[in-house]
Length: 129
Image (cartoon, rainbow, N blue to C red; front, side):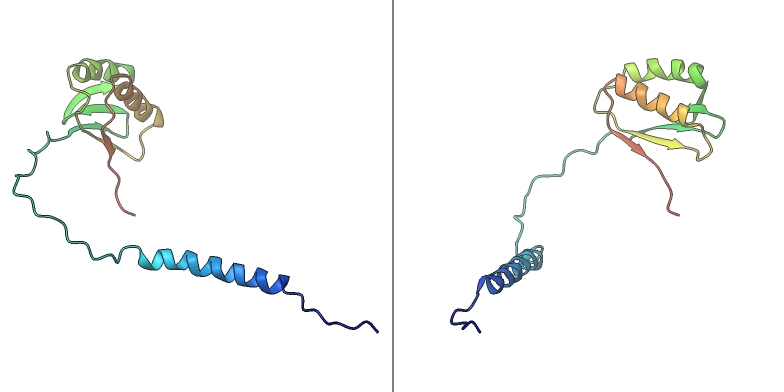
């Protein structure tokens, strides 16, 4: 029989490295969000209120509405929407309300038109289930 006068420490080192990785990973999550930071006080007034967002709505039949005013459906509605968008600045906020039963084509048409005009501040309204 062969005599064992050495201890193999490689499995022990592997286990210790795994434990070290676990401890370091969990330690970063524990510290996060618990730093005692006091924010400075500013005397300046808050920035002026932004312009209110313009509402664009699409009903179940695909008709477009600009702030409650009907523009028509399909290409006619998009053609009526285009000159209204052309005069707005690129920083204008929009709220897009789309009926759940509306065709996706109408939604994509409005988004494409907004994107083509460089208007990217769009919020899409949904409701909680």
